Amino acid sequence: MSIDGLQADSSADRRIRRSSDPLVALHYQLSSTRARGEVDAIVLADPSGVVVAGAGSWPVCEELAAYAPLLADGAWASLSDAVSSRVELLRREVEVRAVSVAGQEVLLCARRQRREEERHGEGVSRDLEQAAAGVTRILSAAA
Image (cartoon, rainbow, N blue to C red; front, side, top):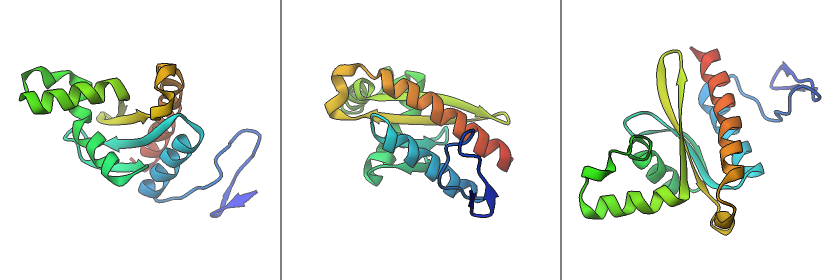
């Protein structure tokens, strides 16, 4: 099967949508993770909290990206009460993974589906690991 001029072996590669543009490819990767997973939104952010790519409600993606550095570092303890309480609430709903590509760190952040909270995010961890592998592959090819 040929998609966007690339050959795809369906037994070895499950990707349906492809793009040679890294930002579009990242969006496809995150959208696929969100569609098959247990997440409401998933975002790739730079270390300063800026969205690189995302899937899900855009305001949620922006919020996740903004808080991802705080959630990853645990630096929220020294924040104001209002910000600290929001970070604490997000900590219960969100998982963050640091992904290093060519010496640069990015943050992959996902918010669990609210109806799945009782499952404690086992599926979310698996989905994030698979998404991290895809993000690494895409960004390594672009570097």
